[in-house]
Amino acid sequence: MTSRLPQFIGSVDELETLLSEPSPGTVRALESLPGDVLLLGAGGKMGPTLARMARRASDLAGNNSRRIIAVSRFSSAQCEQRINSWNVETIRSELLDRRALASLPDAPSVIYMAGMKFGSTGNESLTWAMNSYLPGLVSERYPTSRIAAFSTGNVYGLCPVRKRGCDENSPLHPVGEYAMSCVGRERIFEHFSRSSGTRVAILRLNYATEMRYGALVDIAQKAFSGQPIPLRMGYLNAIWQGDANNMCLQALAQASSPPFVVNIAGLEVLSVRRVAGEFAARLERPLRLEGTESPDALLSDAGKCCEFFGRPSVDETQLIDWIANWIGRGGETWSKPTHFEDRTGSF
Image (cartoon, rainbow, N blue to C red; front, side, top):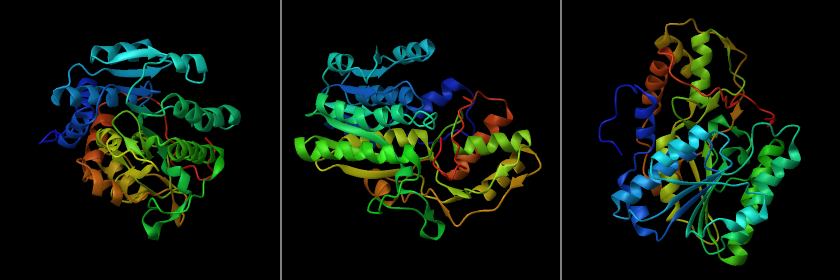
């Protein structure tokens, strides 16, 4: 990773370069893995820069001939073109179509990013198909591959703030059908890992953040526009997406049978009240808050993550500084709120 972080991030190009910069640990992990890397569902928020990082790490590891292949429906042609400009191949595919899935190239390393969260309320059957049925199809298609499968900290349910987050051995208490279907995703991957010996890493992400989206961006935008900031989910985790990208690629080397399970999250339990106050001060806006904090929240313990992959390179103070500057300058955002404040599991 960059030895010196910039004071501020000035452009989308600079942002995406920083998000895709591999750490030495990631270069070593990609050097140790054979063959090509296939990313399924790579057209979303994390996929493009994760694919670019895999390309950059492979090149630095001396494997310029490795194919990095990003698979998605690619509803945005601009997104696909940008990925191609980074020397990453793209394939347009509907993954729930068995024939389309069967036609995808073989790859010894697979990153599973496909899933459905927002819009799941009222469309529960598709949510379960994407989050629980598709993992079975992918497991059958790639039984001998290493699979790093994204999951979510929502599988734990609400955790007492005094506990400072659930660890990987905590019982799962999912709230709402989205979180339940994500437990289903994990269990299906676990089943095939145990029955077929497929090496799997399950990555419980909680919350990846960059300048264009994320829970901290949601809070900053509300502060900047003068909207009240809800406190009912009064605490959260946040991790720089560049760190999450590095940890995902390193997790491929840890994939095992039964699965290697790890929380990917920031180290600190962040107070929404405090973060909102810091954004309001930096953006020179009056602070408006709404409601009171509950004694529990969606929180993940990142201890195991740090043990295997090291501490995040970007802390919460740096994130707040970057995001405040970006929002204050009118930087591009994606209008994709995280709904971090939701406590019912309805997305």
